[in-house]
Image (cartoon, rainbow, N blue to C red; front, side, top):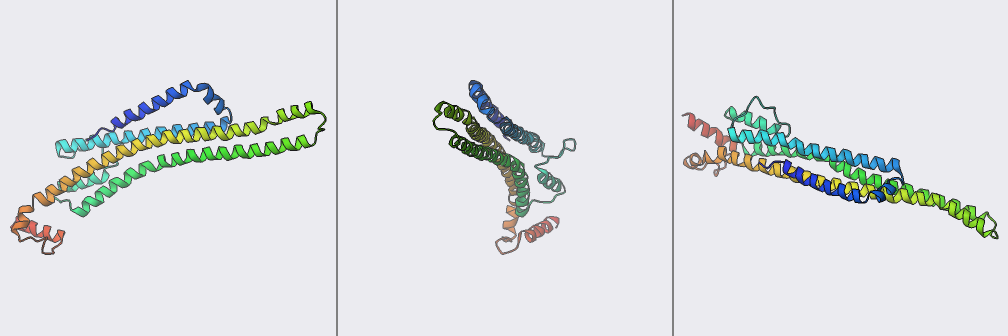
Length: 266
C-alpha cells in the first residue's frame, strides 16, 4: 500500500515555496491587503481553513492504509485495532468472510461503491472552499467597482459646481476627490488577487488529495478483485468444469454456488 504521507511531502513543499514567494513580496502584499483588511482577512482565513481541512483528509488515510496493510499481512481481523471509517464496508465484508460467506461480483461492486462514496464525500468541502474563495474575490471586485463608480460620480458633480476660473481650487478638489475611487479600485483588485491566489493553492492541494484518494481506492480495488477471484473463480474453476459448466448453461451465480456447496457437502 502507498503511504499517503508521500503526498503530504508534495503539499508541504509547494506551500513552502509559496510562503517564500510571499516573503519576498511582503511589502506589495501588505499594501494590497490594506486595500480592504476585513474582506482580504476573510479570504485568507478561508484559505487557511481549507488548507487545514485538506491536510486533515490526507492524514485520515494513514490509519486506513495501516489497517488494510495489517489485514493483508496477517490475513485476519484484529479486534484490538480500531475499526476503519472509510473502509467500513470492507471490514463488514471481511467479517462475513470469516463466517465462510463468499464474495460475489455484486457484493464486490457494492463494497467498492461504499468506499468511493466515502472518499468523494471527503472532497466535497474542499471543492466548496475553492469555489468560495473565487466567490469572495469576485464579491470584492464588484464591491470595489461600485465604490469607484459612486466616487467618480461625486467627483464630477463637485467639479461642475465649482468656478472654472479658479483652476488651482478645482485641481485641489480633483486631487482630494480621487482618493475614494482609488480606494475602491484597491478593494477590487486586492480581493481578486487574494481570492484567485487562495483558490490556486487550494486547487493544487485538492489535486494532491484526489491523487492520494485515487491511489488508495485503486489499491483497495485491486486487492478486493484478486481476493474475490481467489474465492469465486480459482477455488471453483475445476469444480465448475467438472459440473458441466453450470454458469455457461444459464444458471445464475447464486444457484451455481449453492450446487457447489452441496457437492462439497456430499
